Length: 133
Image 1 (cartoon, helix red, strand yellow):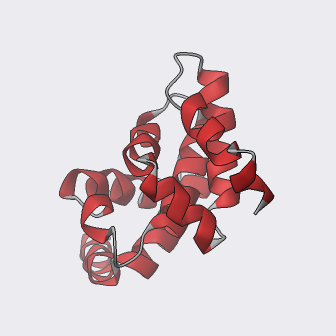
Image 2: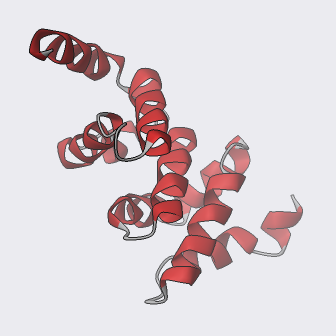
């Protein structure tokens, strides 16, 4: 409730539009840490935060990518699933899910996202992985 009164979520979203990668990291981290509460996630969604979070999936800053994956995990629900589960977004998340050798945290977060929000896609990946190896 206090976050909403002080417009902290809006401040985090504003940080995500800055050219300074540290501010983007700060804003994305704040959004990620706030979105576990559905009322905060609703504010982020209502204020146009989903495209900002999706954009952070291609950040050169590892923490920003981790925060973006975590935020999307909490933001994705029936009301915005189409916006988040676009093929190009799912492709990026699937690449992170299979990048365990590069980053275990990316892989784990991406796999958790796919398991919860697109289990049919995750099971297809598992079959492909098993047939290749």
